[in-house]
Length: 443
Image 1: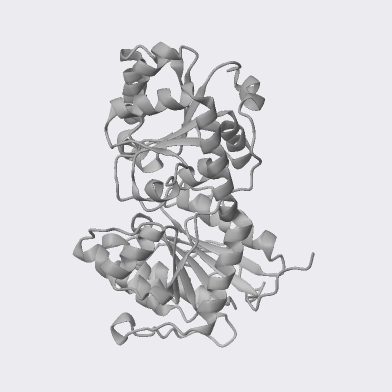
Image 2: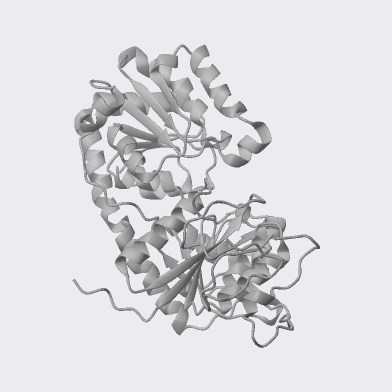
């Protein structure tokens, strides 16, 4: 089969990136891989933002990295990307991964870019504070296209932030194209033959609501003594840095106090995709008991849904949209009785559970990564055809650097504080002989 035709030759990805333990890092890597597989002739590179001073041991596609708290580093990153011959920038936006109030440092990078930008919005708030609203409005003004993953996100962009609808692309969260499987096929791998398996996965943090599932389990195991609840995922790195493993330990103590310890299995690690497939495969029911309604995207929900799991969830925005029309079960926030009733209903009614699984799986075929890659490429093409509407207030003065004619702009980054080496030059897409300045560290 011939490669799909596109005028895009090179894509620059900006966000965070694996091996950083973050859902957006996983998303960025998955999207880049999907585009590479669907459009093998298109080049790409990544310029990730770091939350740690030492950065990460990145793969070869990472060419430049910058620290979240160094404003000048955002401008240097823009300079690098401007001279990279990229046709379009694919930016991941989440308030928490960039520095400054409400992640406002990313605006410095966007203001200096001279390349069309397609920005994926991972969070769209219904009730932003003044700073959050200003930042997202300016991100929108400086982007050629905005991508959201739910109809609710599209609607709020218009109603709350004043973004014109013709600037917004709705692309569902991508998912791997997994087969529709019988969970019994995987159960011997986990030593749970003949048992019903519940699953929650993702980075652990208190807003996930896992304690509510634990409090519902005593009622469920009375009628289903063969039940196992798998809680898969490392504790969120930011939580570990501030509080250690206090949250995970509190969940383990709660399971002990409730007398359900033997029914709960904690897997304290960040799993790669191949291992995640087995965990998804073994699950009979997937549960997302999140506590906050204002969640417009959940990658874990998308993965479980698209693999054909029966899903029980609290009614946060993404879940309400994805699980409509009997594609899943919604239970009220913080309602352990309703959670228990939903689990009992699905466990006891195999016909209902399997019908729900099939509806979810079929709906998920429009979300597979190859389809998402095609939709993103269409957005990139549109971004190049339609100039970004930049207001004068959205521009910062161009910075003039006195570079010797024989050196690339990458070798003449603006100065940082004495002794700083916060921005790291990896490999130049311009010239293999480009030399990193003293304020960078070459690999």
